Length: 437
Image (cartoon, rainbow, N blue to C red; front, side, top):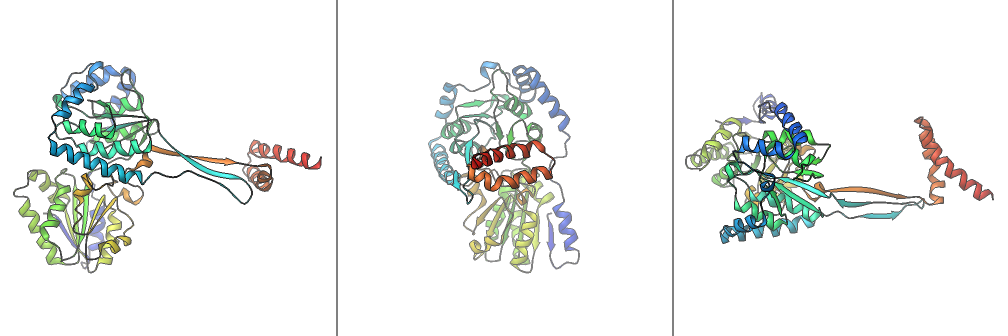
C-alpha cells in the first residue's frame, strides 16, 4: 500500500522528509560499464557501435545500414494508420506553434556612457536526439525533442533510436519526418550517446544531445557533458495532484496511474484537504489496477512509491508541493488558475480538472521533457533555449572608454592582473594625448 501522511500527526515532518529522501533512481552500478563503452566507441568508432548493438539489441548492422534509408522511412510511414498519422500531425502543429513563442529576441542599445551593449542568440549547428526504441518507443518524444531544435534553427538533426531484434515503431519515423529530421540511426544505449558526442566514420558528432533513456543512457549523458551540451539527466516519471473533495475520485485515480504505468520506479502523489476523498481515490486506484493493461508495473509503482498526504488547507498543500518540486503538477481545484500563482517549483502545471497530465504528454503544446527528482527547484523543461546560446556584445566609443575605463583599470590593479589594467590604460593614454594635442 502507498503511504498516507497527515499534516496533523506529530511525526509528520520527519515522515515527510524521509519520503522526500526516498531514492527512486536505479541502484544498478552502470558507470564503469558506460565508461568502458564510451572509450571503446572513441577508439574503434563504427566497429564498436556495431558490435555493441549486436550484443545488446540482438541486431547486426553494417556502416551502410546504421541509418534508415529514405525508402525505408517512406515504406514505414505508409504503414501508419490514417487516424494515428492525423493525430501526430495535429500534435506536431501544436508543439511547433507553442515553441515558436519561446524564441528569444536579440538586443542592442546605447547606455548613458555612450557604450553600445547587447546580446545575440544563435542556434547550435548540430543536435543529436535520443529516443527510446523498439515497439514500445514514443513518437511523441521525437516531436518534443526535434521540433524545438528545428524552431531554434539547428542546421543538422539526427536521431538515435534502438531497434532491438530489428523491431521499430513506424510512428517514430513519421514523427521524425514531420519534425524535419531525415537521419535516424537504429542504435541505442551508451554507445549511441558516445557516437553522437565524439563521432565515428559514419555518424557525425553533434554539439548537444537531448532526450530520455535508461540508466546507461543517463550515465553516458553525464559523462559526455562538457564535450557536448545535454538537456538534463532524467529520472523516473512523477505526478503530484492537489485536489479538493469536489472532484471525481476515478478521474484523479487514472491521472495518477497515467504516470505509475510508465515505470515501476515512477511516483504518484495526491495532496488533499479531505481525508475521506483521499480514501476514495485510493479505492478508485485499486479498482483500476484490476483491469489496467500495465497493471503489474503500475501496482509496483503505486505500492512502493505512491502517497496520499492530508492537509488542513490548500495553503499547506502549495508549501508541500514546492518542497516536492514535482515533474508534473495537476491542480484540480475550484480556482486552479489563481492558485497556480502560489506554486514556485514544478516542471509543468496542469490547471483545472479538465486538464489531465496526459494532454501535456501528447497534444497540449508545452514540452513533455521535464525535470524530475526535485530538480524543478533549479531547472526547466526542454525548450528552444536548449538548442541555442547567447553571445554578448559590447562596443566602446572613445568617450565611453574615458568614462568607465579608469574604474576597470582600478579593479584590474586590485586583482593584481597588470596586463588587464595596461590594456585599458594604453587607450586612455592615447585619448589624453589626443586631447592634449
